Length: 443
Image (cartoon, rainbow, N blue to C red; front, side, top):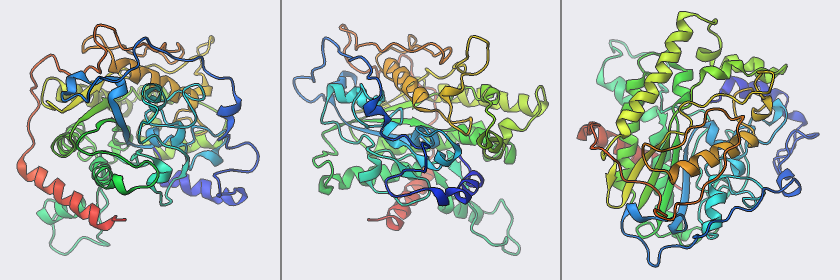
């Protein structure tokens, strides 16, 4: 959920910054605050041990059995501006505190899903160790296994023509080929992840990943940018298009990555973000990077249409992931719904608690990331139909321990899937894109 327009404005003021070490003039970046701040109380469970032997079934994976953690998504997962105080911090991706994969310090320093899992397996591979700067090249040593990309849609089309070739119609097959080759989407991230997992034993920072033997946990949250861009192209960024590309992406993981549990986190209701206000330049620029949400007038037909689109995204994602469409012996995709009805945090006077939001009035601060991490952890150890929902971020979430009667991550679906299988031609095209991506990004 980020825009090049916003980045350009920030870069104009970035001359006062020191890029080395990701520090800014004054106190705009507080990267080391966690080690000096009040520590969270310890979190302990009666059973934090791994299984006696490596599980062979996805239904019997305990938290301590997970050897690898990874994340896919957009700027909510890259943690844009999460540990900054002004607009100057917005281009910084504070991956080390990201809710689903941040690895800064310990659980007592900052609560992230990765830091919770580190309590069960201190040798966990993949947590993000540091911040990065949006748009600059990064390495796995900097990002860990956080493959999220700021600004990514489920499918973001970039036509490479300077002008449309004479006689070519937008419906011509070549146009389809061009946008597939030029598109930046979640499947690109998956290609990058697969390549990294397969080449990881030769990496220096965390040697020892076994692609076929180790259990891997992947968290995916994406789609908010599609909703932000919906009014710009109602076909390309429709709920049906979102589901099509999500299906392709999940099929790629199921067919290519063994011993994997995938958390797909439900999209949150976006309309309440209109209520977040601060007297800052960042809040003004919010109209630029999610204009379809922010610019419509209250009670307008445009706003009502976008709200309904948001609901459609949620409903269709729920339908896609019902049942066993993405379930087999060593692989499962689980919808974690804790954000589906989440309302913004509010102060006693009813106004939005701005301490949960960065200077851009859109992304979460560390305070918000910690609540996301706790909500996701709890959902993983709650069965389908009994998963907790966040009603308001104003109420701090209390972590649960894996139940004694079922100490495993819940993965088995309750009902048979009605989700369609994508056509082989679509999967072949997607795999071709993956091969092309590897050839262009080999390192």
